[in-house]
Image (tube, rainbow, N blue to C red; front, top):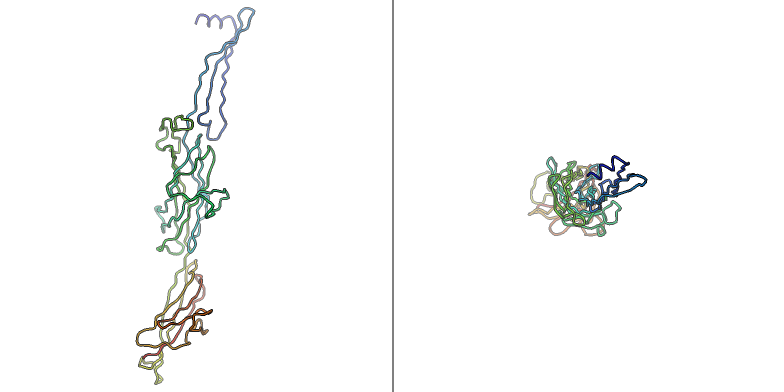
Length: 324
């Protein structure tokens, strides 16, 4: 101590600190060795001397962090076709980390809870779900390791449940949890970080989630059936020999489409179908199962209406039977 005091009294002393941090948004990369050495330069008499302290080394711990963003910002339409919701998962920590990915369609306030068909990771980076190309994982399974500040896109493929009605809204949550650990910020997982350093839970708690929306686009079909009777005596009495003209009004509502709509009607007991009487919107259909929409069998009729959009004009199907 006396020697140092003498140096301070008789010369000039300068100190320099050296360090080599990395400049990342996530912070200095985990496992980076930060070295620090002090030096002093002084004059004593006619000579100038430089001395150095011992070097102190600190290896940077891993800070665990994650963010989840819904890239599907407007509600996706789900109905006859599935809807794909897109999310981005970003490693906001300073070391490589993987994250358990869980899609949850049961969110408080939903008009309906969607059916989760698939969880997939964007393999080719185009932001569009490509079946057979993108990596499908089990719901709740881990992603690949993600570098610090890097992101992946995650797809949740959803379907409308049978109970959904037209124009209902819903949300689906994607949650990402660090596979290293999560919990209260500041929690330490000893030796679990990159290069064996400790891992420390950051401000996110090691978990994050985001919600993306759905809106159902469905069609509802109603059938209204009526009968007109003509008896052999010029009246309308349902006596043997009377003809019964059955009419079926097909009404479709909603913003979606009823795909492959087929209307069937069985011939009632005690009657006999009158061949060639099937009509659709006033135009005759053949009884044979051929290129037109109608067909008649020993048990009843079938009329194929195809894809019928909600709100399209009503369609009327008719046919005749005779009371035995």
